[in-house]
Length: 191
Image 1 (cartoon, rainbow, N blue to C red):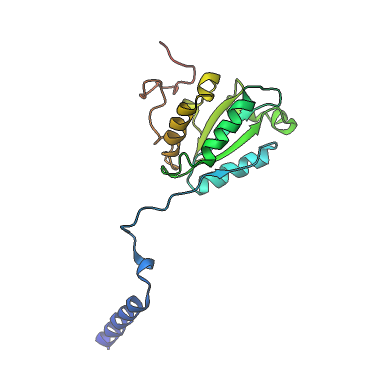
Image 2 (image 1 turned 135 degrees about the vertical axis):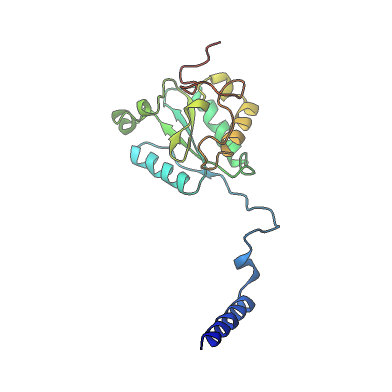
């Protein structure tokens, strides 16, 4: 009785394997991995939208880039289109893809809820990456010269895109690429 059940089970497995597409069981494919497309979101004017984008990026294991801007910031009008064009061109897709949204810091709901204070936004514009819903303050950029430098932004996007939900897998946060100490460079360089 026992051997007939085993034989039936084995025959069933052979039949399943014969009728199953080869791609359904190809865990270790020899084809190149699927490149994720970069995702552009609309401007954030309410904290609920921001938290939704954080959840979406976290669930898809891509970092969320936020550019904190205001309506009166002239530098923001240069940085925002440059950053958006780089992301639209696919910078960071080869590393796994990114999501991007500008955050309107002076929107009434954003200001009243203190969202900028939560993430230590002390100057405008500020570029801040989130990985697995955590702000990556070590790699936060608020230097206007760097934010208008296309090559710097390309490198920054690629580096941050390598995180892929690994909380810090993108590389060093300090100016030399190494560790920045116990506070993660929160107060800048000691040099």
